[in-house]
Amino acid sequence: MLEVTHLGVAYAHTPVFADLTFSVAAHEILAVIGPSGVGKTTLINAICGQLAHTGTVTLGKQPVTPQRQRLALVPQDYGLLPWLRVAANVGLPLQLRHHPAPQRVAAMLAALGLTDVADRYPAALSGGQRQRVALARAFVSQPELLLLDEAFSALDPVVKQTAYGLFEAQWQASPMPTLVVTHDWEEALVLSDRLFVMTNGHGTMMANPLSALPRAARAHAPQYPQVLTDLRKAVAAQWAE
Amino acid sequence: MGRVKMTGVALLLLHGIWALAALAVHKAVLPTPWAVYAYFPQLARQQLQWHLFFSLYRLGWSMAIATVLGVVIGIAAVRLPRLGKVLDPLIYLTYPLPKIALLPVVMLLFGLGDGSKIILITLIIVFQVIIGVRDAVRQIPSSLYQGLAVMGANRWQTLRFVTWPASLAGLFSALRIALGSAIATLFFTEVYGTEYGIGYLIMDEWNRLDYLGMYGGIVVLAALAFVLFAALGGLEAWSSRWRRAA
Picture 1 (cartoon, helix red, strand yellow):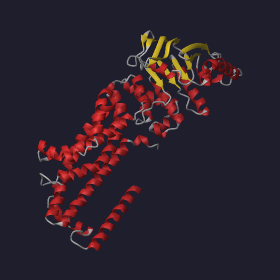
Picture 2 (spheres, chains in turn orange, purple; picture 1 turned 90 degrees about the vertical axis):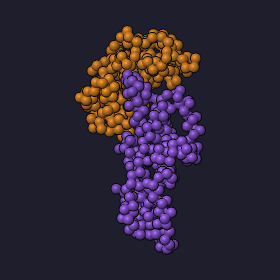
Picture 3 (tube, chains in turn cyan, brown; picture 1 turned 30 degrees about the horizontal axis):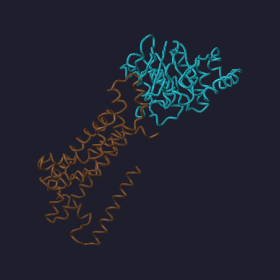
Picture 4 (tube, one colour; picture 1 turned 120 degrees about the horizontal axis):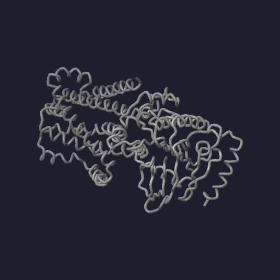
């Protein structure tokens, strides 16, 4: 379980947020949603120990530190090392921990349909393939905490649906507390169990009205358009301020 | 294959111009290419291989030292920001300085031997290597460093997987550009305090009015420069093969 308590980050004495408290259960996906510039990426950076902050962030009661816990982050630009081939990029988290497992890497590549491009460099891949490499790299180390920072935003709608499906399959195979940071309501509704809506340095926890449905069925559910409209309307006034 | 063919055509063209000029001038100071090439067996008897060896020896050491210094300083200037704050203005001030003007100083301090020659060539190319490596490292997106930190990488692993591969591409492209100045400086340093080196050979043949030998030396120096340039070009392409999208 990830617990974030009274978390605050300030840049040059100007607080981005001062007091965020929430938790993500062991088998839960929390969507963090907010307009651009509200501090979503800052929140991710603070959680994975890359930014000085006030308050505490714990994972299984232990402070979050990349050296001691297995964390996985999929940033918006996917963060692939351009000079490593696909297979090496995917195997990197294992190699960094001195547990190279070529078979596990190969299985992960196969699961995400990347076997044919295993020997290519990221520059030779399509955007959708690059995103899948980033997902493979995130899942291969069986992380204790998974952070996705606008990890689906750059994909076109058709590729995005496939990517949701692949993500879901991998996540279900071994769920972990997961934060999906996004500005996209559809992504938040399709992927998450709950929603954490950020506005001007504050956050509000909301239920995902579609959480009872299987993820793959949510976008096609009859109530989906109405839920989307209602949520947007409910938050639009706050975000406009 | 296209590139090899084009290089061949360019070589033929250059020799054509040379031949035409030689025939037009028709004087001993500008012999024809075939006369110069016919003179090569005799040039070989004048210990051409040793001239070549000493030139390569000086050039090789200079480039090796410039590589080590350039990579270490170039990486440190970016990855150790506090050191970078001191290094950057130093590099900025000393880079445009015509280091060749330091020749008398280098000679006074390090003598007339190979040491002073290697130091002078190193001085001239090391700045280009520092700047090439520094700029390549500077262009690494911070998200790559962050990604590795989140995966639990230590400093050494970060250097190995992020900084080093990026700096290699910068290194070889800087060395390729620096090669021209390195060879020019090599020639300059070989006119004093030595009896070996292609630069010495050219100047010596010139003094003895042996124009065929002089042109032979120039051809050898040009061939040496071309081979090194092509080799560095190959290394540069290899070190940045990940940039090509195929």
